[in-house]
Length: 344
Image 1 (cartoon, rainbow, N blue to C red):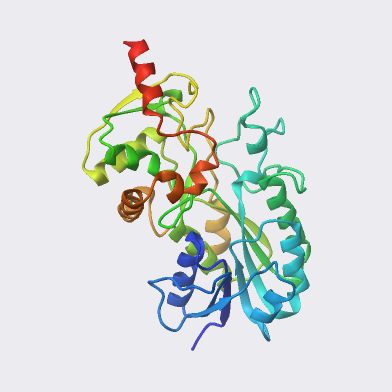
Image 2 (image 1 turned 30 degrees about the vertical axis):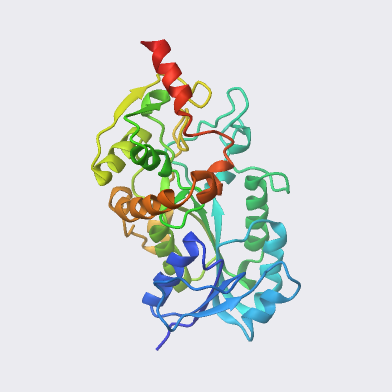
C-alpha cells in the first residue's frame, strides 16, 4: 500500500530525478511534474508524468487536482512561488522546498552577494548551522529571493507544514553547471598541469543529488515546519577533489599551487574561495534521522562517466550553461602557460 501521493515539481532536473527515484523506492505514489512532462530514463513505469508550467495562471492547481499528501518543490525561487504554495495549502498535506546555502551571511553581513567586493568573501564559522544570520529578503539576487521564498512558506506554519532544505553545492549527473568538469575536461584534453589558488585548500562543501533525495524522502515521511542544511558528509579541498577525479579517470596530473588568490583566470576553479564553506548536518541527523547514502568520492564514477560523455559530444559552454554564468574562461590554457613561463 502506497504511503500517499507525492508530487515532485521540477522532476526532470538533477535533484528532481533523484527525488522521484527515492520516493518511489520508499513506497510513495509519485507524479513527476515538469514544464514538458518528461520522464527520467531510470524511473519505474508507475511514475506518472505531468506537464505543468507553474508560472501559467492556475496550472499548478490543475496539476494537483484534488490534492496531494506532499509536494516536493525543487524549483521554487522567490516570494511569489512561496505565496503560490501557501495559496494551495488546502490541496497540499505538507511540502519540502529546496533553498540554498547562499542565504547565509557572516558576522559582518558578508555573503555570496558580496564575494566579488574587496574583502567581501564571508568568513563563516565551521560548520554553518541553520541558526546563522541570513540575507534580507528581496528580489535583487539569488540569495535574497531564496530567503524571501523561505519566509513565505515558513510563515504558513501549521497550515502548510514545510521542510526547507538549504542545499550546499549540488553535484551529480544532469547538473547544468558541474564543477567537476574543471578537472574532467583537463584530463580529456591531455592537459598535464592544473593550477590551484589558495594552495589548493579551498573548501566549498558539495551535496550529491542522492543525499538531497534522501533528505527529501525523510522529510516527506515526517511532515513539519523546519529549516535544515543539505550537504555531503565530507567537505574535501579542491586539491583532494582533483586527486579523487584523477583516480577515477586513471590519470596523473601535476598540481601547481598558487599561495594566494587567482591571477585572472589562472588558479580559478568553481570551488575556489579564500575561506571554507562547510555546513552543519547535526539538525538533519537529529530531526530526521538522516544518514548520507553516498560519499563524495564514491559518487564520482557515475558523475565522471556522465561528464565524459557530454564533453565528448559538445563544447563545454553549450553542454554546461551553469558554468558559463561564472563569467570565467575556466580553460584558458594560454594564460596558464604564460603564468608558468613567467614563473620559470
